[in-house]
Picture 1 (cartoon, rainbow, N blue to C red):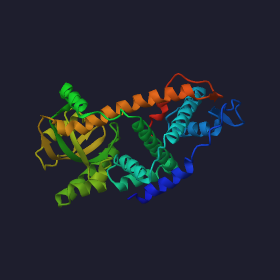
Picture 2: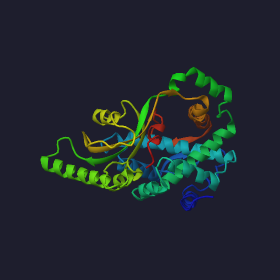
Picture 3: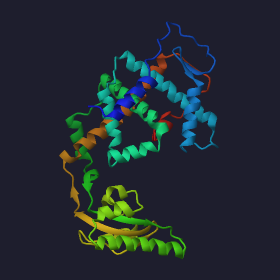
Picture 4: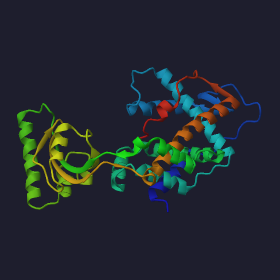
Length: 337
């Protein structure tokens, strides 16, 4: 059942992505109307849409204000033209993005976060991008359905197995450990007063642990690290993933033991080792879904490129800005939020 947020996104999408305007009977107009940056088979793309995207990219730091903005505008326009072409092709193919598909896409995005609460907290800091997230989920789902309707996206079991057999070294799980930490941030060149204040906070954490407070609870309350909402859990990691001082200290600890304060360039840490695992080869069953997604993802982008080339050849496109050789994916690939 769709979540309330999914329903809200669905409502936003219905408002933000209405059915396309009817295509003009042959031949479509080629004179750009006032305020249009391009015509795609007679359907105008407003200059305002280009400017809005540019403003958004600059505000997020994706594009520097000192960049070649004319080239950036041309790249944005290329992306908007491609978006229009793909949307018309999806409508022509009878593609329908249902609320259930939207909800699944939202759940997939939310899986990047530790919890629903973390996702909501993140979104509160990016309210201006909530509609943008919804648009991207809709656009991706529509394209997935369109390309799937053309066939050839999903690899066969034999293809998945052949990739696994030919790339066994990809699926060796290195020896590693799992740890949690409490971090008191401190710059490497912090003055003595800041050093003393940081160590006082570390001692307060040690006292809480000595009094029997669970490590996760102390980390959630006192740690400065991004892992604090997870009780300080850093997950599994192998050799070379952490700074040397942290890794050397963790290597000496027994499971369940907490370190003395450890200084790194990030500050002071208290480290709890919660697990160790030896190196091992992953099985085909363990790697299968990962391989299937990778092979399908590669085919998805190839199919998208081929379909766009076909649609572009057939369409009548008039631009106010020159076309660019660089792929529009350069900007599309940046995170929406």
